Length: 398
Picture 1 (cartoon, rainbow, N blue to C red):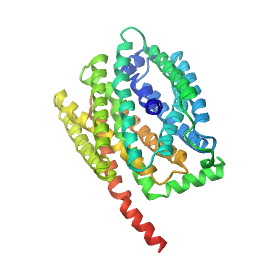
Picture 2: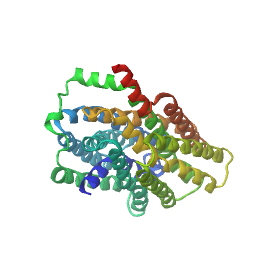
Picture 3: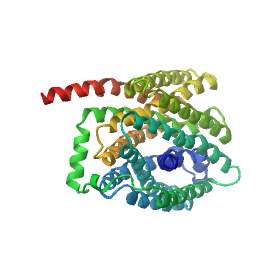
């Protein structure tokens, strides 16, 4: 339970740091007298920082163990959160979010690598599903807490709370998380070796297929994260508190789907569960787009939106487990590249949502549906099932 709570808290860095201040985005645009697109760059900066930070933290954790880079990353996160709370302008806020993201990246990539250190096979998939029980609380509680904070404080208070969260995790890691990577499984983090490791991963069709599938699906989710506050508050006239409730219900869907996935793993192959999650997600995304184009009432938009977002609870643990399964020795680097692809592709979604302008939910839903279709196509064309991979390996040995 201690391991679950700490690793779950570390993996929740990303959604918590993003979701908690989503209800404040329209207010921040007014305070800074900036456009919606400019304020959304604080999201883009955070996603880019997560990608860069994971590239650095992953190989370092393979070399020095998981704890030292993690402690440094938590320190950076706290410093970035303090700077964000004190930012006098949107430009400095964007820079502070980048620093905050570099620290958060260490938590995300090392938590995922630690799971690979400790578990294999279906046990790894089950633990990833359990992480969603903790991690899923972030999208449930974060926007609700953010919305309630805005009733008696400004958006700066949100970053003060994030500072406290980072300090809490720093203490938990320092005193309650043993090193999960034995010394004999570490290897030097030389630049040439790191580049060769990343090269091998990028040419591994199995890893790349599952990583791209996860990344493209994450981009659909990030389109929702970056665009929903404007679409639901400006177009459908929800208050920040009502929006936070809707956002939280979608988080409940992720948790429930994750626990269903944990129950089904072992009864059904991970690849079968992944295919089912992608199919439901894609169909739901297309229905959501149709509801926005036809300007149907809000429930017609929210129901398929709930289904699409909930499928993350099935897609994420299975795609992560299948991608990392064959990379025990380089789990940190593999976890880093998996995360980089997710957040780099996800970062593309934010400007795409902003290009459509305000006053309509079509840009958000079109971006979500498009990336959902691409995720399903990536799975169908690039990934290789474990049985086919094993048969190919056996044929190669003969």
